[in-house]
Length: 448
Ligand code: SF4
Image 1 (cartoon, rainbow, N blue to C red):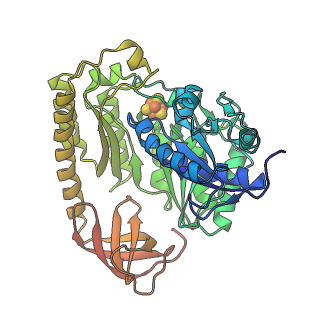
Image 2: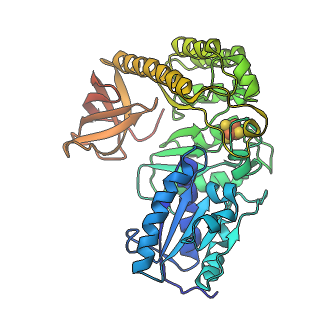
Image 3: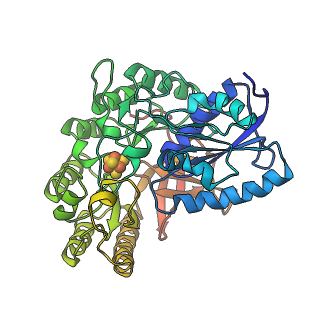
């Protein structure tokens, strides 16, 4: 290889947990290729922006970084700048014309090429590796993770659902699953390294289908739960249409699988769900919610919502508000719709809702959800919860911050506990986003 071994790199990660997991894969690939991790962006010989294209302002957000890097490159001529992930996959080689500061591009399926791409970039070739590789799952790569309490384990990549508003099928390609044996190998490594929480990841994680033995997601989840009895198990993101009764049973029956399901609904109107190509109506969604609540008492539900999708009328918006009141989500990610280039909605549906109306509807959704979230937190006061301590709290070294299995943030007095411990906490107070409690003692490491 022509690249100079030992050059240092820094990855700036944008977007979701999937991108954080990809940055750990990129780091492992580059270290294996002889590069080393820089302590900061300023110290690095190579800076890689690992990007996300899901939100409208994705390009604006990286533009700011690229402008900064243009200045850095003037000061350090040998600095290489790469852009990886969904944005280059979406914008293709045009990105190189838009931003002369960029030296190389790598899409989500070409990270194994990065050492070679950097070599070509050093020769001034400005390479772009943007092809989809349906077979690529990065099986066999041991991701290089930050030291911490939780570890992400990707189990699917890409998505076949083609929701009308979403760029993911165009930036991450068709869905593929990691072989069951590769996931289990990865879980064993994570357990050996002492992590206390494993999050199984995929754009549509619960459509997992083992390419070797045909196991489904419920079967995988049970196996991971048994392999890691001292870890909490989470998963995201689920599609409501792929929540099977067996998956609900797996969560209900396994003490270390968290009682939290992120269940994106997007709209409370079946008419809008049909336009969005979500593959279910609101009645089926509510049946799934009822099943989860029946089988998993105290289950926490969170969701994603889009205000003002193409053709949304006042009654559709009212249906969304009614849904929020009925389901009472713990929390939600809430956005107004903006067309994303290349998606089905961008090609075939008129963006009919004026921006001012979208913003107004979004504000009503946010106001209602915030009040419901606050009530949910208030209801927890007086209960004793099982918290996995993650870090010192920002306010005091005498306090720790952690999360319940239902994914609520809790701050409590440290006592004898350390990050990574399971701690029993009596909740004494609720603010708008956080619970505060009293340490009742460290719990056994194994869930039972
Ligand atoms: S399920 Fe729909 S919203 Fe989620 S990644 Fe796939 S296409 Fe996008």
